[in-house]
Picture 1 (tube, rainbow, N blue to C red):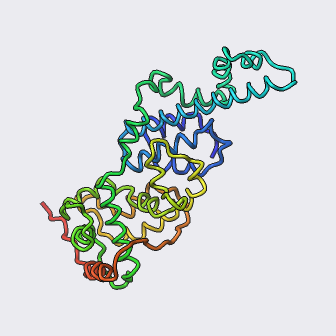
Picture 2: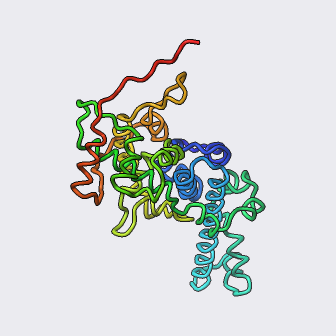
Picture 3: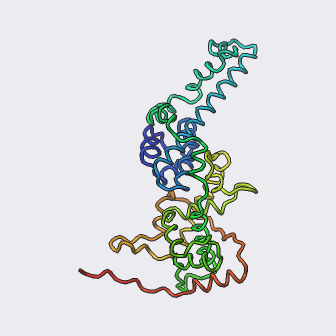
Amino acid sequence: MAYDRTFFYENTWTRFRPRRNLKLLLTDSKDLFYRQKQISFCAVSAWLVRGGATGVIQHAICIGITSALVAAERKAAAVAQTSAKSSQTLSTLQLAAASPFLDSMAANMAVPVITGAEFFECAYWPIGGLATLARSHSTAEHGRELSRKKTLSNSLEMMRSLHVAHERLLESDRSELSLGKAAYVVQSVLKRGQGVAADQLERHWQFYKNRIALLYAANSLKIDDDRTLLEEMERYYPRLELCEEHLLTWLGMASFALAVLDRCPVNWDDFSNPVSLSSLNGRRIPSGVTPVPFSPEHDYSTSQVEQIIETFQKKKRGRPRKRNS
């Protein structure tokens, strides 16, 4: 993508646009300002876990920007100290850095050299500079905001049961993969609803319905032996360097999960504008992503799987037509 000086402020900070930021994460870093991908990854992670809450997303961005400044300052200090010890001709800045009393000042002076002017012109100053960073949540507060909620765990379990049914039941038999059935499975078959009634599980799902494919795919993708991509994205500062090589696979898995959601009924809350779950989630995934098939990982017993299939093995019924007034 061509470098856009207004992209960050308009599409990441002011109004967070998931699809555009996900596309940005797949681009070449040379077209971006200093650590822009890492900062956007912080925002994407906050949006994925907590939805469109602007405050939470902006707190994540502030943590990303602050971390970028700290990294630049450390790099500047390290370069200055290394140069001061060498026999090369020293610049005024390097000479200042050689003094333990001026080391920190020299590093701060060198930060714009490390970050480049674009970092300040496109991100730091537009969001309000130091005043905004100072008002932002601490890492501990932000970490609590992103901590795993039982509503998310239950919704992921519902999605897993839908995936199991999708894999076992051919689409030709017209079995309906409804959310009501998925909620019943979690609450009555798996008994993992943590005491929450099935209808309440369905209501919890609504908070995640526009990004459940991305959440489920992230929860299903291991980035190492001990951690899933979603677990890393739930951190107060998700580390892009650990996740970047997995991002395209993640989006591909989410794209594949759309086929599961495509078998769920459309949202008929508004008869004038019915929207399928597949379409609702597909709007968030960048175009051109190749689906990556995967099987549902679970610890269900054979008996539980059989009960899941029996629950979902119900023929589709016609939807009521909107009555004329």
